[in-house]
Length: 276
Image (cartoon, rainbow, N blue to C red; front, side):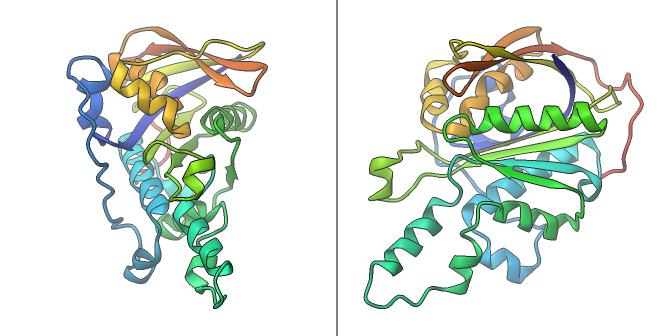
């Protein structure tokens, strides 16, 4: 079992425009109303990089920046884990369309944006970070894999790690064979010890045998089932309710992550790092 301390959260999805604005919805105090996600341009990037950035990069930067602002940590000094089930579907579609056409001249920008770790690259540019970074995917269980990787690094290395998870739909015809419901991104800044920014702890246990994943409210449940990164919603809802809770997140066919969430009043620990 591993214990993590949560210092900051970022969130962006349909009808979920930031963590603070989404708290009443996730906490069950306000009905969820689906609406197109508002993906803001990132002020972290230089103008040229901002123009070239794909939607998935903008999502990753938005949720990452929100989480670090709450955590009051310097992103340039913090290890990161990026998790996505399939990367940038729009770029993959455009590349395959060009390769299937008579004119196979591929835009360098498209090629540049096609690699799975491109959000990590833009993040390092935006934050001037030279800290270690991991980019991974695990199909529908990518959020669970990312959380497990981040937890392992926090526990083994004894320093903070930010998990940034995101997904975007594939265009047609790829969407017919790999449907992803909607855009979604979330970020968690995780620390090995309690600090002034800590507002909850999470005990994580990798349990052998399949578990029944925790569900959320009906509208949000459709999002959770349809978008891999949104498998984070039961954890986010538990954090929003600020009550002790147990959450199960499925992981592969024969395992599950059992999470025990305990709220903590902020300001009781010793802050480390410097403000973002």
